[in-house]
Image (cartoon, rainbow, N blue to C red; front, side):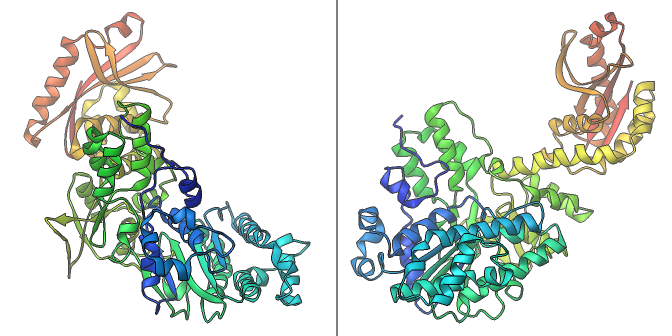
Length: 559
């Protein structure tokens, strides 16, 4: 194994290059952005952790007139285009701002973070206050925003802050500005659960972006990134000088995510080719436009783990990097046909759905199409691919779960949803039957609860284990799975310490509905043959043992 210096968690392009971290060359993006000079602003939307911020810091390093970056780009693909390098490298004033930290529990907190972000940007350009080329009125407002003096900046000053800074930079350098806005939609995404918070934040962000982009004589070129292409009428009203590039487009997709060749090269150089299969199953499967890509965040993290421990198993790095409330809110609203579609996806199947790429964060739950659209656009679902073509028809997009990591996100979220939901369901009749040995009532009540669940693992035994554990979780009982008892391991053990009583469930999965009774009896016989619960009998604990068999969303229980 040969260690390579991986920039895990580092999205600063110059720092990666200057410190000899491993870099997958995506500088061709610069050439693509500049190829169509009729396009002044490009909006790029991709799921999180697909390299948007690294791309933006690369663009900033390339264009920024205050830097000397030739040595940074030497040896990279873009350096081969000497004419473009001569015309564009470090020739333009740059405004680079990220809204990734503009979050808060309410509007006041979020707006405070936005003001801080703008103030930090102004402080970075504090030299403009001394420029003889900038008019004094602009300087006065600039200082009020940068210094955050009493009562300043006002809402109106924040709304026009980017346009003001661009105007001052253009005056100082006598050159128009490159505008780079990263994670533009975070302030609205985090506000979407609260209508008042959302509307107040939209009232600030909309004019701030519009005044910077629309008919701005100080703008040379703009690139904006985010997760969603927010509906034009919501945030980019009247802005006609930009194009969007989403995961359905083909122009820029090789620059966000790792291609198969890029992953093969990483594994070859790190001598980790043996992990190719696991990496593909866990982190590949995203189909953007006509390009197949891996999630780069996951690949880099797992390769780093393998360098430290060659026996490391794949884990869900994506799910650990942020919350997955999109999945949870989707499951909370799932009913009827939606539940069936989720089960189809989790069993490895595909569904056909209409996709709406022009959403607002306030209308995500207004229709079923919007729900599937948000899962597709944020990377939780992807296009199904058969042979060399993607499945898109007049009937809609053929969607599937891209890989094992995303599948585990769905499964873990469903488990937590079931545990939380079960606490609100009336389980008293079930509990009474369990402790009193009424297997008929247990069968009836269990079946009712099964019909409320969302199945994953295609009705395999671990699904039913989680189902049983979820029913008793949060009800004051201790729940243990696969614990040694007697001469073997029982599937589920429920203990009531206060009452010195316990219940053992031995679980079987039937292949056909007609096998329920037979399999249930086998489970009961196994309990008796293996002497489950005998040590608790010796301790004076009242133990009841049940055989339980499942077939899809039906069950049978025998005491």
